[in-house]
Amino acid sequence: MHDTSRSDPRALAAAIAARHGLEGPLDHLTEGQTNHVFGTPEAVIRFSRDPLRGTVTDVDEFAKEAWCSRAAEAAGVVTPRVLAVGQFRTWGTGAGAAGADPLSVPYQVQERMPGEHPDEATPRLWQRLGDCAAALARIPLHDAPGQLFSRFGRDLTSAWAQHVHHNLVALGEDDPLFELGVYRAGDLEWLTDWVSSTNPVGQHHGLFHGDLNPGNVLVAPDGELVLLDWGSAATGPVPWGDLVHLQRGRFPHLAEDFAAGFGIDPEEVARGLPRLELLQALDLVRWAIDRRPDLLDHYRTTATQTVRRLAPR
Image 1 (cartoon, rainbow, N blue to C red):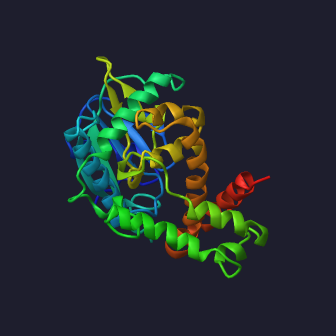
Image 2: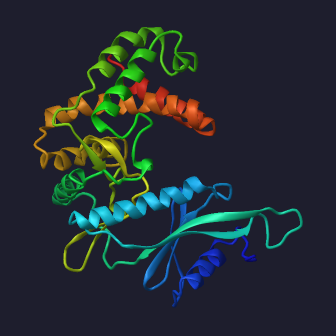
Image 3: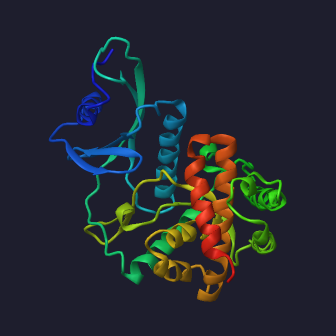
């Protein structure tokens, strides 16, 4: 039994580094919303910040990222190689504390690549990221892990149709979202119209990164782009899965540059993105009701704000 306390992330990172023979100084690279991230001169170590997430699901999520890394590399997209995925057994409240239960902490080790984070305001960068996204969308998915697919299955065209239909037929005054106050009776007409017309121009179903932002991109010394962090990768309509993320994040002004490489003009971006953003917001509430009630308040609040913001004036 390892005596590393989960309350000391640096000690846990050092223990993981020792397990895999990683030498040299240990740097605290960043503090993300989901993971602690430490680095040695040759590798990056990531593990969950939440002490209660020591589950097989989390190990599977890191395995999903490893699959994406290998597939992206094979498609010509530069990304760090995953060196190890595993679990580290530790204690929840202090090393060997009386009554403390051991926790299996999922972790990932990947190579540390040189480079600098780019200027987020450069249109050329986002055009190049669009090229990367196009390569990802062509990756064969026959052996892809289940975590990359929605609850509607692995047939992406059918899954998307079911996804839209599921949210469309649920609309009404007996909808749990109506009861939760996400929308009102006066919203039903326009919500029905928007959800039923969610069929983006240029839509192709495939793999997308899901969290493109300058913090997840490096410009290598030779000028190559390096994509980091595949934790949000998923399958669905391309390039719209990434466009929705850009739209709701800090980069809505860059969505048109990103979409240009797919032949999607600004008018279609302006029309399609709000509908997809709305559909995603509603669906996440339904997903939380079914699968993650602990996240329901967060997604309900987000969906309510989205409906209010997008409602026709």
